[in-house]
Length: 242
Image 1 (cartoon, helix red, strand yellow):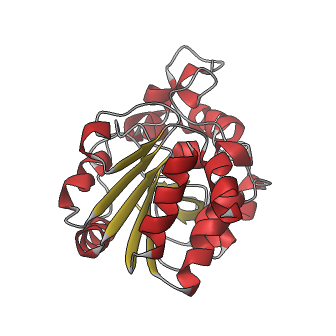
Image 2 (cartoon, rainbow, N blue to C red):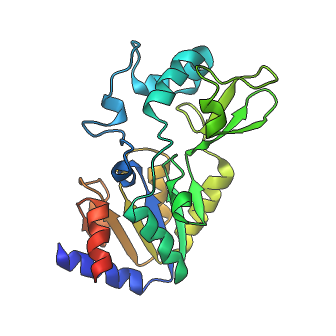
């Protein structure tokens, strides 16, 4: 393990343009569950007879907003979560490198840690909009509008997150792919690479160093230059000691 961390440091030190591609596994040490582990979102029971995947879909949100928000507020909102050592480390890299964050996470922790170039493929829980008049609401405002947040115009407020059945934001996708294609190093952190189309963006990487950091193996391990199967915060702690 030590040899791999030394190699990771060498790769980072010798890189100029780095893309950090992050998934839910990055934020578990901040107290936010991932999706597919034993304690993940998809294995948690809801009070109604629908699966989590069904509940966080566009059609379910439109048809059953009260049930959607009950699940959403209970299982997907963590207003007191703070960036962990890995979020902070990736932000610190901006001091000497050109660093872009491409994330599947919706928790805003990269920005809270200080990263300036963050491309949120699946949106953010911090942003919310009225579906009727498009007025903006922050997270605190909708938390005060339980059980279902409605705008003063009467329209329902929707989180600016990509639900199942919804397309990704084309502008964000274009920007993310551009950064990936320009990078000389891509570090993939805390994702099983099972969620498409986001996971497919790895094919646009043309650089020299592809690094995969994840607790479990992924389908792309065989094409990576460096694979570390361990907790990312533990890795960063050891990396910072070198």
